[in-house]
Image (cartoon, rainbow, N blue to C red):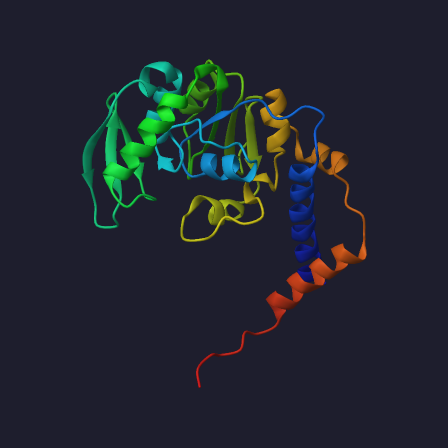
Length: 246
């Protein structure tokens, strides 16, 4: 029974997240250049249809310390040239922008990464900026305070199992909920990043809606469709997979 309850709750989260994104607002989302320290910004931009990309950081990786420095003066760093630094065997390509390191794992070459960075940097406007970050592992109080002091109204910092100190922070209950979203080895499907936070509301208002309010604003009715989804999810987990070996 506990297994069924867990699966039911997980499906509720997925359904509520989808409803939160599908609801039509009276006003369209504001023009947004989503600055992010990893793939999260690209996922949100694509899922919300905020194309073309207005941010150069799409699908790039920046360390917490360098990312906060980058966001502290977006106009300065976005005007700086991206300079080749090196690459590894994955391959991951590395570059520097005003002395800050940026890594690219989704590009076939550094030249391709630089071409996309330069094109999107030309579209970027500081007044369109919204900052979203997810730092895997621990983050120091000093960096959290520095993120809070960034001169940007729309900012969102995802934490994992942590007390929330600032209005722009949001703590998720499990790192596993983000694994498929953050790591490129798994496809980004069905809005994992919205499982516990109403991103549309945040982009529109600059404020974060707690999960309790998300439940209130996007109620789930026990329809036949909902029951079928739960049963399908349960069936996939309890039924042993058939071996393909012959």
